[in-house]
Length: 114
Image (cartoon, rainbow, N blue to C red; front, side, top):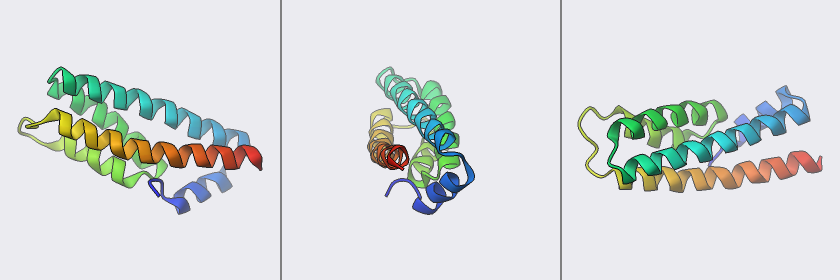
């Protein structure tokens, strides 16, 4: 699982069902938008842009219990030297975000069916 199931369960207990679904959908939208920005920055060889978007995504991922995605973003944003291959960093972030997306979709479907 790309999302920590304990974290997701705790969040579901703390929020009303509609609020829980709204939080998941908002995170999904932000994650997809930021991954797109990261990919565009990588294609343009824009290290600053990639780091800025990775910073935003790291925070969002951390707040949702997506630790592996958060870690990949932190690696991309914390290097003081120029990242040698922005495409590799963007591809790793995309791969992890895709796994998180599957978990989010599953959690939304479960919450909507409840």
